[in-house]
Image 1 (cartoon, rainbow, N blue to C red):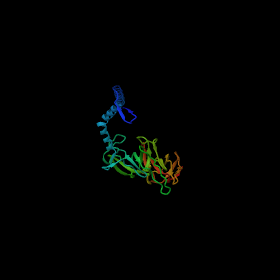
Image 2 (image 1 turned 135 degrees about the vertical axis):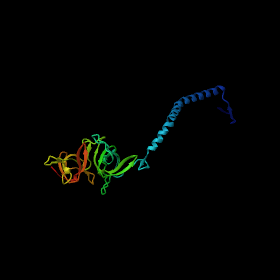
Image 3 (image 1 turned 45 degrees about the horizontal axis):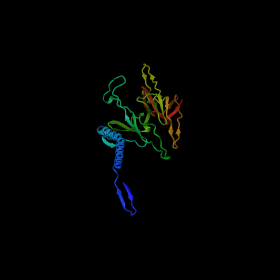
Image 4 (image 1 turned 90 degrees about the horizontal axis):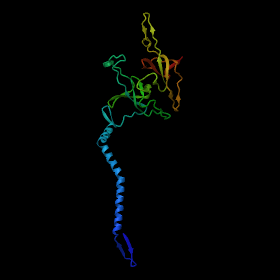
Amino acid sequence: HAFTSSPTRTTTITAPTPSKRSHCSSRYTLLRKIMARALLPLVAAAACTQAFVSPETSRSAAAYDVRLNAVLEGREIEGALTPTNNFVLVKIAPIEDETEGGILLTGSAKIKKTEGTVISAGPGKTHQESGLLFPMPVESGDGVVYGKYDGTEVEYDGDKHTLIRDDDILVKFKGDKLTLDTADVISDNVLVKVDDDGEETASGLLIAASAKKGGKPSTGTVVKVGPGRMASNGEIMTVDIGVGDMVKYRDFAGNEVTIEGDEFSVVRMTDILAKF
């Protein structure tokens, strides 16, 4: 609107002329068209997104929410089962019901493996005096072999798992199958190829060394050596044994492991008596 003032300070409001009203209306209409053209893609995109989200995506989101809850021994828990300290959660390998030769095994004859895949690992244990954290030697996805009587079995998400300590691990390996190339030992452990030449009787019968009086073999050739044990100050104490060394270790000290059909023994450095 136009405002004019008179000397007597009276204000007169003059209505806009028809040409001015037409000009304002044209500008307003043009502004509406510009805004409509700018907002149209945004409105269309929002409509497409809404159509895409409902209802399939909402059902998928609901399924995802269900997967967040795991089942431990028949009880639903929130989140995943997380090991503490130096414990490792291992999914146990399936029981073998058939030999390599194709013979089917039934009942108690089935071979229960002490082998599995690492699902998750704790942060590690803390040294009681120095407070240093001992790092875990395995990570999710690693294959491990552990002692026959080690671990606590749990039913987790419908499968058998076990919780073991890192000290219970005899051998770790990468990939789906344990081979001598993929096998490795941890800490101050040593993997020894057992010297089991046996002994022949007068009638020609071969007696394995493990069947002779005195127990299982306690000598062999070193094929793998661990990095060493960590000291209280965090330094690694290396092992004074090398691959290819012949060693004599304490009777019944080693833990037997079969790799590719051959017998090996996992021995701690402190149980090795001599090398030659």
